[in-house]
Length: 430
Image (cartoon, rainbow, N blue to C red):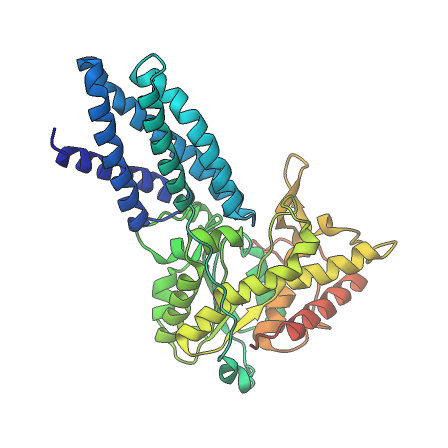
């Protein structure tokens, strides 16, 4: 039988599989791996078709069941590998274990599917193919992106940036960790004349915001307010003094599956193309308190990932300094102080006091309450306006005009001091 229809069938199946994966988990097209799996499919069907001929006409249909086994196992193991590597674990031992398990199970499955009895030739063929397919499974998770050291970028940051002498117009790009209340609080801290618009989503990556053919989950809900503006159109207008972008959570997933370095550079480039004098900021967020390793212990180390995988590549691509809004670091500093003190800091006793409570009474592990949003707004103010937020108001309104829960005077001052210290300590400089 001609291998042409076999090749076309395998290629179409692989495109379908990668289309599903790209939509579901953001792995992208990975055409090289698609071609490799297509080649494996050709070999598989050729071997199966030839090997099944002695077993009669009915046996010719059984290779399709074998191919289905390979495809389903690839999807399952590929997804498990994606989750494993997204947590920061090494891919190598996971690939070894997957290969061993696949090689052990495949002969048992194929033996039944092809012959219904124990056949050494079939076992060896299936085992060899199983090892081949298992080796390809690891490529479902792309290799870890290299981290930019920032070497050679010192000249971009040698001259201190010019601090604003007037209220600014700011565009926010991100997701629910930007939300509506935090930018509204920032506007109140900055005072009359500060203007802002945004484009948001649910857990949206920079890539999904950038590419028009990709879905932004929660777009209608998150942007149903007067401050929404299309991000591409907004930056092209040249009307903004400041552009603030942030990446999805988890950052490890974004780096590995959503080409963070490339899309941070693209967005920074779009902002500069619209207004060469615009100042670009990267908003450092945080991960879920339920993730491992420990939330507080992990935050300081995350800083290198934000710089090396997003900030430095964007600065290198645009030839302009990109600055950091270290909200995650500010949270780490404040919580470390509160949890180390016997009585906390005023009403702030632990990390959980910064996070929202659901209508059902459960603590949200990642989205902030009014206290958390106030701290993040202070950090934005300190970074964008370049001055200490100590002494700024702490009784503010939410985006809908309702009064936000105000921190006590003692806690407000500690938050203001901590935000300013975090910005000073993490000022982006290679």
